[in-house]
Image (cartoon, rainbow, N blue to C red; front, side, top):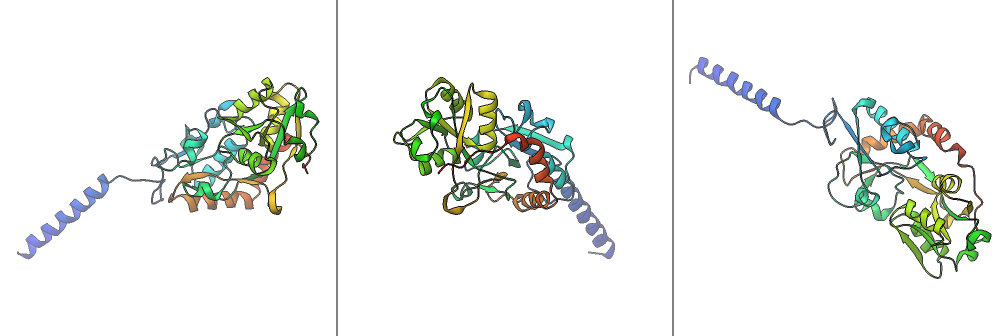
Length: 278
């Protein structure tokens, strides 16, 4: 091959390589190697519906409500504008089940547990809460003041949650924990007298007793076993997601600069307090 022919061949090979590179699919945001569901977008999952005080009026795109505000703060930390955030809906169980996901991360009060870590990744925690027993003034459980007082009552919670686990592991009622598909189902059962009490996380407990229930009462918080702190909520990501470290760094930065605390003060400050049950 002559020098001229070799030069032409080299130019052709380079042009072909550039053409193939231009046609190759890209992932991630500008300057990011990949991992996002949609190039240039941040896809965030939440519940259907999503409840106060976590999301206001079931409209996460508004940025109103604790978890909606958290989501947009994380998006901003990752370099996404608000208009580049896409919301999808999942059930609680779908989000933490093994398998492919249609979101980059999901938030709907997922407590970080070792069992769930077998199926999904978690960011570092963005909020810590406790479990609270609530009832109504018309319930037989209204006079309960201790865990022992609760043993013979029907007590329920949403299945698959740490609230449900707390009933089984800490209260250990004689009839066992009563199972509900959602917190709303549990609240309705309490209002109808199907159960005597239910267990919710602290902010949800204050919303249920103050807004959802007629004569709603807080019996008290369940103590943390073995001196542990409260349940920690983390963002859920697909198992072994390439974004886990990046999203965790964003949450950590928001904690360090006080943003997480500011958001909690704005949206959860009215939650008040509840006595710890013995």
